Length: 265
Image 1: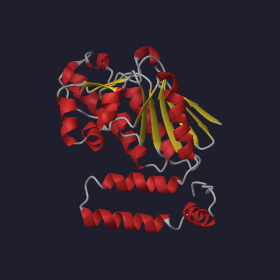
Image 2 (image 1 turned 60 degrees about the vertical axis):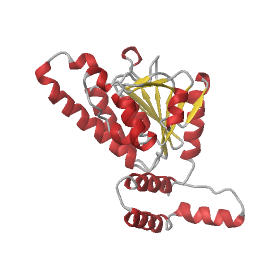
Image 3 (image 1 turned 120 degrees about the horizontal axis):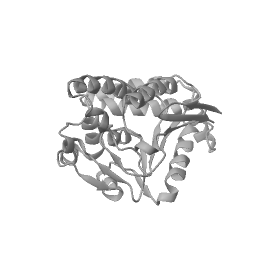
Image 4 (image 1 turned 60 degrees about the horizontal axis):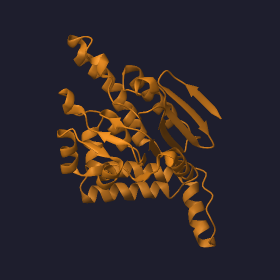
C-alpha cells in the first residue's frame, strides 16, 4: 500500500484502487489555492501510474465540499481576478487530467456539495450520493458565473437547458432530484454511501483499464465532433485497444465461457 498525505488531500493506493479523500472537514473541504494545486499534482501522479486502475473520491466531515473558499475572495478586491486565474489554472488542469486518464473515477457524495465542487463530482464517471446530500449551484448567489468546467460537465449529465436552469437559478437539488436529472447515478442510504462507491470502484479496478480510458476519451470527443469524425475516433481507438492483452483475454474468456482476468494492460 502507498500513502500520501497533503494539506488538503490524502491518498492511498492499494490493489489498483487510489482512494483520494478531501481532508479539511473543519473548513468544509473548500476549493482554494492549496487544494487546486495539490489536486493538479495528484492527478498528474495518478495518471502516470500503471498500478492505478480506478480512483475513488471521498470526503471527510459534514460536507463533501462547500465549493470555493469565499473568505479568501474578500481579503483584497484588486487581487481577486489574479486569484481566480491562478486557482482555476491548477483546478482545471487537474480536472482535465482526471478526465483523460485511463482509470475510471468514482465519487461518493456523503454530504452537501456546492459551486465548483458540483462540477468536480459531475466529471466523475460514476457518482454515488447519500439520500440526504444536496447539490447547490451557488455561483450567481455571489455574483459569479460558473467555472470548474461546470458548463460542460453539467450539460453532459443534465442536458443543456436543465444545466442552465440549475446554474442561473442557483438551484439546490436533493439527491433524488439530482438523480432524476442525471447528475447522480445512484442514491443510497447515508451509511452505505462509501461502501457502495468502494465496491463499484474495486470492480472497475479489476477491469480492462485501457478500454475504460478509451471510452472516457471518446465520450469527450462525442460532445464536439460530427458523426463521421466521431465514428472514426471510435474505430481508431478500438483498433488500438484490440491489440491489448486485456482485449485478447476478454475475447478468449468469452469463447471459453469463463470469467476474464484483466490486468490493465
